[in-house]
Length: 149
Image (cartoon, rainbow, N blue to C red; front, side, top):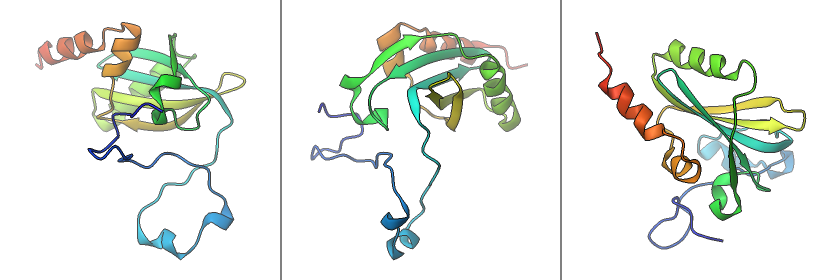
C-alpha cells in the first residue's frame, strides 16, 4: 500500500481510518475520548463535492474501501454532474453557516442516492484537481478576487 498524505515521519499512519464496529467492540475505553459513530451505508461509490462560492465540482470516487483515504492507488475518479438537488443542498448548507467553501463527502448507494457524511470547511481538493483537471484552484482565486462590497 502506498503511503498516504496522512502518514507520519516514521511511516506509520497518523490518522484513524473509518472502521466498522459493533456492540461487542465497545468497552469502557470508549469513554476516554470523543468518538463519532454512524450507521454503515452500503455504498457503491463515494462523492466528493467541492463547493467554491457558487461553483460546484462533483467527483465520483470508486474503490473497494470503506474509507477511500486509506489507499489512493486503489481509487478511480469520474467528474459527474451532481445528483438532482445536491448542488442546491450544498449551497444552502454553506449559506446557513456563512461559508464560501466546503468539501462535502457522500456515500452513493446502489440506487444512486447520495447519503451525507460530512462537510469539511477546510477540506483537501488539490489531488482531485490533479486527477481530474477540474479548475478548483482557479475558482478559489476567482472567489478571492471578487469585489467584497
